[in-house]
Structure formats: structure tokens, C-alpha cells
Image 1 (tube, rainbow, N blue to C red):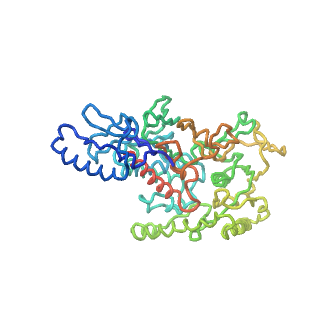
Image 2: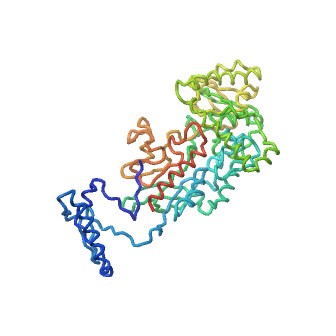
Image 3: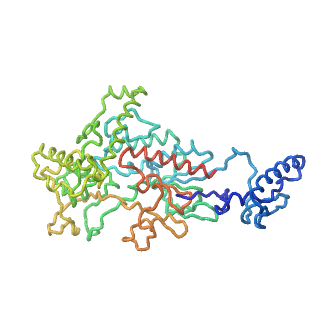
Length: 528
């Protein structure tokens, strides 16, 4: 697992056997001022030495194990060293400089929890954005909303009993995490509009050197421990089609939405049918003149994530005032939350290949999709929309309103691959040219877990060595090599929260993050 190194602690070599360490000449380690107690101490040590020596005939330490300093102290160590024990009380802990990269939900919870769990921690939380929230700060496209129930998608120790909807919108989620940061004084530890351009381990100092950029000014800082909490959607990707630079219309990524953009009465192309594309397409369909929806591969549209949940609707699902009033009672609300979360921990069988639950899912989802298309009289679309891969190979989404939007007169589903862009629109490989006023790209983010900036220790750089060898021939690992998705071998004092493969397909994302922060706390406290 990941190595922990402290600049004020030295780890003894592991090749020294216990008998070789204790079967050495024992000399009273006392200064002249302790002479009055030397006799008693020496008697104890000689008695202890005699009992140990009876198990071995060799009691002479190698010369390298014996040294005497200028104050008359005699010390023993397997190898020559200049290290000296500090003179301080046992509960007098040194400060620990910790950098957290990212102020999304993981970085914020770490910023709230670590000061209460790690004595003397000095936190600096860096984020490239001008406020907290991570993906919920960046994703502001029309229709953005969580497809996990509001009362599940929140911190366990700071719940909001007064969510307005069963499935909260992006703005309400963003406000929750901003309020959370204020409540736990996380803002005082934040360094916003600041990019970490690289992290480099310096073994001589046993610290990380961070290269930082803020306001166009580059600087360097050192930290004892670095926590990467940038999540999976931090580095969104624009598509790279031929001719895109010549296109004269507006190109917007859903993860970098331009709030001044107005799609009313425009011809729009939406590219991608992942979670964002499935939300933004039906939202824009209601106001745009026409939508060309480019979805090269079909995707499964699932229902509610657990049997106890209400099916999602295309629109708000408000929580009644009576229910919200009842949630003010702690016992009532705790029971409600536990029951709701329980269902998320009982769907694990569905991701196991060849399990009954897994085998039943294609038929279940096919029927669900057919029923929704039947309701609008377009079951003929179903063969074009059923994937040739099992559910759970891609992230499932309920997609309320998505299938229905594909049946509208102002929407064209395009499954032919894009060949290139022209000044006024897009041409597909079958030669069809479709003029559009704007292009909305919901083409996802970095999918290989590779950090967007160098993270270097020794000969390894995770921004290079986690990439697939087929993509980068110099990659030393070829995949996101890690321990529990949290630590990386040969990368001391470094931890990831929600890094590669850290969260199970069941349970909740927020709970996974809290659990990993607790693990990181244990790593940090070992450095004190």
C-alpha cells in the first residue's frame, strides 16, 4: 500500500531481527544530571540484558550500532544516523501541513472532518473555480438535476431535512454544499481560483512540492500530505472532429455551460447520450426550433434505482409541506433516511455477471422502455434504442422525458457517426449535411482516471503511467495502479478520494467519500 513518511520520524530498517537489536551491550543512557538514578537504572538494565543474553552467545554490537554524542549519551542503531529523538511531551504533537486539491463534495467533507480528527492539521484546499461545489458548480445546463434522491445524496453528519424536491436540481444541490462549507468553516481554508499545476515528491524533505498558479502568477509550496479530491468529472473533454475550428456557430460543453446562451427558436445539435446528454436534450427540446440529437450508440434507460423509490418524472417531484414538517422530528427523519438508503445497499447482485438479477435486467429495462414509447405511440423506435451490451456496463440513468423527447416532431435522432464540421453545421459519414446554429457537447470527461497534471514520485508520473499502454507507450503501469483506489505504491503521503474504482456500484457516493476520508485520517495521524 501507500508509504507514509514523516520529516521528523525515521523508520528503522526492516531487515534487523529483534534478537539482533536487543542482544547488544546495554549502556545507561543518562546525562551527568541523572547520576543519582544511574545505579537503579543500571541494575535494571543489567538484569534485563542477562535475561536476553541467555538466548544468544553473541552480545557484541557492530561498531556501526554504537555512537556517543557530545553530551555523553550512548546510542545504538543498526546503521549510522544523525537522527535524534526530540525532547517534548507525549501529547505535544507537531503541526501537519495538508493540501486538498478540489472543493467538490469530497474536498469539502475532508475540509470539515480532518480538523476534528487530526490534531494540529493545517489545511489548504485548492480549487480552480471561484466557488465550491465541484461538478455542481460547473454543470449548470438546462435540466441539470441529481438522479439520486435528495435525502440520500448528502452528508451523513449534516443532513438537510428540508429538500424541496425528491430529486434536487443542480442549484439546490450547489446551495447545500455552499451552506455546508460555511457551517464547518471550510471557506477559511479555501484558496479559490487557484490551480495546482503539478505535485512532486521531494525525498530529501519528505514533503510534496506543489506548483500553484493563481491570477497568472506561479508559486511553489511544500506540504507533508496531499489529498487528491478532484473527482471524475473535473477534466471535461470536447470532441475533436475535423473542421470544428471552422464552425461559425456557438459550441458549448454541458460541463462548462454559458449561462447567457439562449436556445430559444434555434437549430441545435446535441452530441452524446450519457447522463448529461440525456438531461439536456429533453430540456432544450421544449424551447428549440429543432434538435439533431447525435447518439452514436444506444444506451439503457433504467427505472428507479431501488424498488422502494418513486419512478422519476419529467419535471419537479415536490416534497409535501406535511412531510417536510414531519422530518423536523429527528427520529422520524432518521427512520426515513435509513429506509431510503437501505435499498441502495441491496442491489449488489445486479452487477455480478450471470447472476439472476443481472440476467433479468435486460428484459426488465426493455419492457420499461417499450412501455414509455407505447404511451406516445412510437414503439417502432425501440429496436434503434436497445443496446447490445448488458446494463451496468455504462452508468444507468432513469432519463425521465428523454425517450419521449425523441418522438417529438422537432427532434431528429442521428445514429450515423459524425464525419466532420463545416462552417454552418455537421456532416455525417453517410453524406447528410445538417445546418445548426449551435452545438451542445455532452461528451463526458476523462475516463481513464489519469490526473490532468503531473503527480511525480521518483521515476513515476501518474499523469503518464496510469494511461493505457496502447495510448501512451511510455506508461509504466498501463492502468490506474493503486491500493484500494486510495493510495499508490511508491507515492508516499498521497491519497485519492473517489479516485480509481473506489466506490461500489451499490450504496451511495457520499458515504463512499466519507469512508475514504476516515481512512485518510488514519494515514495522517500516523505522521504525527
